[in-house]
Length: 106
Image (cartoon, rainbow, N blue to C red; front, top):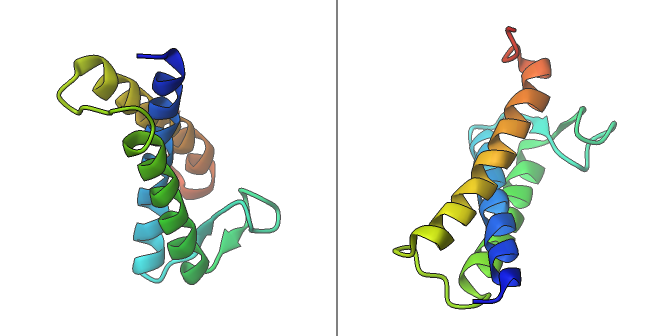
């Protein structure tokens, strides 16, 4: 398998992980940070914009994971790479957004 497929799976996992906070915030009617807020990534965007941003992330993640190469969830290497992308973005988001929502206690 070409190494570029693994790069696509890593970023696909990151996009899929980024879907969750935006869809959840949007569906519960809460504003949340997005790239479209002022200032970008710090200000709040509307719940509707967050649903749309979450859906966009899901489509991109789907495309990168399931439309590049032949992704097989039962292949430990492929699943680990997609999971690593999700974990890396999740940890970054926890640190970045924790400063706004009281999540950084240390």
